[in-house]
Image (cartoon, rainbow, N blue to C red):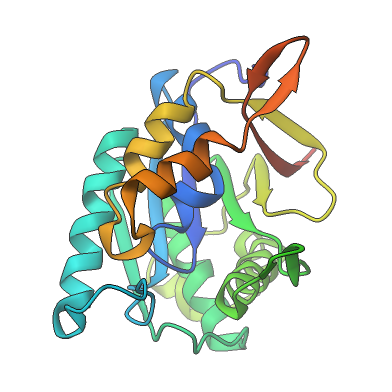
Length: 234
């Protein structure tokens, strides 16, 4: 499938609850079911993200945390950690970069997944959320060179957080993907996980129909794929 010779520790760093499931939920399930460990680091709790018919706004943070945990359980994800950024207010500055460097050095993943900061328009019907782009920029700026270079953020060395070298980076929502995973078998589980995000998806039946409609016909069969730009460090 991918060519990994041993189980990997995978860290997914994205902006909001539900981003992992929407961007690469079927791949996450494929990874966990083949013996890899997946953890989430989400930069906000998505307190501004609701569908038009959702009214329980005062409790939205607790709701989104619960929804995210339920969705992660469906996919076999281990731990979820949140940073303290406000939804819609992320900026790729040095302090944000340092926070990610700290978390990556602490977690020591083999594989890191984030999103494409250059993708302003996902398709003809959707402008990419600025937090998605900001999160991707922060993470990629942290990965190289700071995560692996001891001269960046020396205060982290005082905390015992030594430089760490990643094996690979997988970038979702890429404008120019170079890797395609066939996730046909996992697509139903992705939908099940997304349906845990009740505050986001709205009418379940319409949502389910929309997700089922994302298949691509190949040789008379419907296939589902998730695309990435994959960077393998040498």
